[in-house]
Image: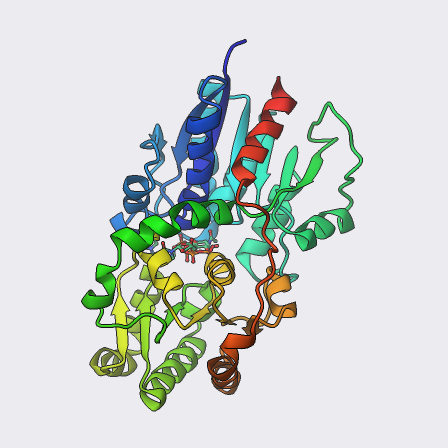
Length: 385
Ligand code: UD1
Ligand code: UDP
């Protein structure tokens, strides 16, 4: 039988990481059956936001890079749709695989569904129930034009059912008869695969950053609501600086370019105070293996990132979430993540709570068995064969 052709669509940093699990599974388990074409929209383009992941996670170089870059939502998404549609029409794949909730995800979903290519959505069903987030619009729209939807958690699966998706649908699957699955989280595949390699290859970071294992906090901030609202960014970073100084505890902060730009342009004084503090280590974005090492050896994690919230759980670290709500509600219900918004008092209270309590926390297996990519590809093959 002829090999099936899938287009694996990436654009933003976390999608390259997620797609690496599918790429690895194609190589290791399905190379005789699946031909994979990687398309990069170019949404992220700095070396440390894109190329570094291709090098380190050993993913094939993209067959196409649309080079779309940064722009307002409409222009960025529009350029992506145009470019993806052209590629789909010339490559004629059997399906398009999309990840998560970025503008690249939505562009892929719209381009493929309108040209009648089945859309496979990995990380389907997540909801924040806050439509002011661009990601919430991207998720809802993408789910509703997908044919196979892979939900990473029970809650995500339930969200899909609440929106009318029916688990009992039977083949043949199509846009009008989609199939929903509960798969576990594809990021967990990667953490299991790369954690020991990270430990082996990246331990030099302790010396480089002058930190000790289990005694520093790892913090990331990148959501538009935190970076573009200067009051929120000021509140978060001032609180972090105070906590670091008061507790004489190092905070390692690999900053997304969006955050560095806003800090430099809007909060020059605070930026100088952060850079002068002996407890603050601001760095450019780090590679996935470096991030994995830093997460695994941290005492606590503070973040507004979806991926980093889950990785805190994989490494059994308490997590303070710099948002009002999260899609990963099981973490909050479990008591190992706390929602602190950008509120100084809430962040400080959560910090003190976790500092004293971290030994007694439990981390149940919410995210599957680390074999989501194999499961997803098996189901895609079943649909297409
Ligand atoms: C995007 C996703 C977000 C995801 C995040 C992962 C959307 C709407 N948002 O947010 O869901 O959590 O990626 O990291 O799709 N920039 C650079 N270099 C780069 C990339 C971006 O300097 O390589 C700067 C530019 O100033 C750009 C800004 O970051 O304007 C925002 O980039 P963009 O891709 O629009 O959104 P993210 O905030 O990265
Ligand atoms: N990450 C990384 N380097 C960094 C920050 C994050 O490799 O400097 C990884 C992180 O480990 C996780 C993913 O990027 O796997 C999360 O991406 P991000 O926080 O940009 O977006 P989100 O998950 O919120 O969409």
